[in-house]
Length: 358
Image (cartoon, rainbow, N blue to C red):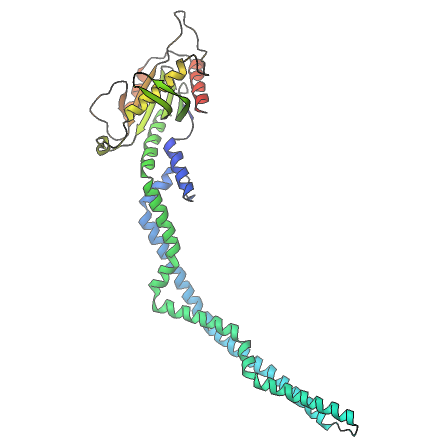
C-alpha cells in the first residue's frame, strides 16, 4: 500500500475555519456533510425535544402549584400559632406582674416600668401580627406567583414557550449551518482530494504520497520563461514513485465551473509548483542535495509530470506541460511509465521533498 504523509490541505483548512468559529462537533468530513444533509431533520429534532421539555415542565408545575398552596397555608397557620402563643405568654407575665404589690417607692416604680414594657411588647406584636405572618410565607408566595405565571403562559401559548425554550439551540444550529455553507468550496475540495488519495493509496509501497505540499522562498525565485517571481507554492499532492514525480492538483469542479472565468487556472498553478520543485531538485545553490545511484553515463534526471485530476468531468482541450485526467484515469496513467529508480532512490527523493515541506 502507498505510504502517505500529511493531511489533506482542504480538510486542514476546513477544520481550522470551523475551530475559529468555535465549532468542534465534527470529527470527520463525512460528519460535516451529514450535518448539511440532515439539517432540516436536526432542526425538527431540536423543536421536538423542547416541546417535550415544556410539556414536562407543565406537568411538574401542575403538581408543584397545589403543593405550594398547601405549604403556604401550613406555614401561615404555624406562624399564627407561634405569634398567638408569644402574645399569650406576655399577657400571662403581665398578669403575674400586676399581682405584685409593694409600698416601697422604688419597688413600685420598677413594677410600673415592667408593666409598661409588657404592654409595649404585646401591643407591638399585635400591631405587627399580620405583617409577621405575611413575611413568614413571603418566599413561598413569591415562588407560587412565579410558577403560576409560568404555568398560565405555557397553557395559554404553548408554541411561544417552545420557541423561546429552543431559541438558543436553534440559533446555534443555524449558525453552524451558515458557517459550514460558507465553507462549501473547502468541503468540495476535500471530497475531491479524498477520492484522489484513496485511489493513490491502492498503489504498492514503492510509492510515496505527500499531501498538501507547500514551500516559501525568500528571496523569491525567478522563472525567466514566465517572467514570474515565485514567493511560495502549494500543491494538493506529490506522488513519488519508481518512474519519477507526479505533481497532482485536484479539482472537484462541475462542468459549469470549468467555464468560470473568475476561477484561477489550475494549469498556471501547477506550472509554478513544477518550476519551483525543479529548481529545488536541480539548483546547486539550494540546500537540498540528492545522492542517487550514479549511472555510468552521468547523473539521472528526475522526471516531473504535471497532472490536474478532476473528479467530475474534464475539458476536451489539451494543455501544454500539464496532463488533465479524471480520477478513474489516474492509476492507469501513473502505472504506464516504466520504473527508472530503485526503491532506495525513490525513498531518498520522497524524504528530500518531505524535508522541503517542513
